[in-house]
Length: 407
Image (cartoon, rainbow, N blue to C red; front, side, top):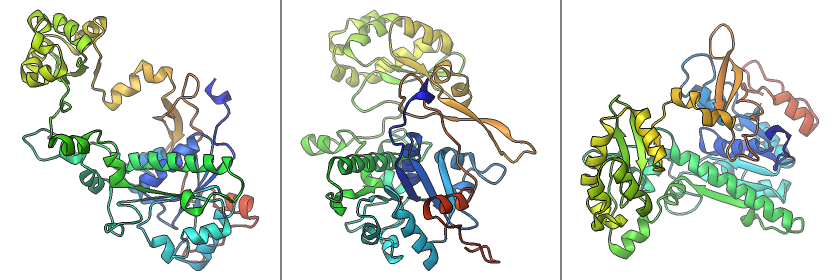
């Protein structure tokens, strides 16, 4: 059983000084695999993500999802006492994650040098729009800006329309992945080296949103520099790969089919009744198929239009042509593959209704063993662990809020 497996990051303690998506995503990944994550939130409002996509109640499902497995502690970083408390926590943590604008922590007296002074083995992972150095370092920016700056936005959408974006903050999530990976590599180096031997600069992880996006752009830059090729938006296709697209079926539902390998293409065309295309020597390689992509897509589209989505998928599966439905949230919740691997896990949660509701949340990736590890808890209520964390880690009660609610 997945819940019997040892958690690889058990014993690692993380201090999250993060809001929104990027740093909280990194901390969530570390929490998923056993790290104790202490999330520092401002008094009263907490992380602004608590109110993003808030349809009812006081805390959004987006916050509950991205902050699972964490402990919420309220600290006011605008106060001297709050900043001293943060350094006290740094002293007993292994990793600090933050996504403030560069220079903010330094102005507060919480920069890398101050953290290193209280904990000479601390790993500091920093996420910002454009990195901690360079001419744009001080510029603010969210994922939308980074996705445009990193080249992704130019390639999303149809060629005859303005650039679009993906339906999630993918730039933030990619940066969070890199920050978590960077933190783990620094921890591994720390463990392999004698205590105190890893210099601060090697324990300082600098993740820029725009660079994280650029790193996902495959051969965008070398194709331009080697051949002068500037990629363009191609709608449901991917530049230079054919046939790989979405097709509308007779019931109005769509399938995605990736029949672009040389071996698959022949049986794919025979399946749709186009032996002429299967036997055409000019279409034996990807370059030839890309040159005639409209003709091929028209043939596939005509075939799909005569079948329901389920009928098309059954035939494609029999022919061993990679294909799948375009899932909605409803489809995912009913999908047997996700269920078999515990990729939807259920919790009782406040949704703003009179009684808590059972709500499914995404499982943990990657899988260790055969099924997702159990999600230990969903994102906590604001300040739910403040007193517990102060007493357990600092040996004193949390500061008592004044009459204005400030600690």
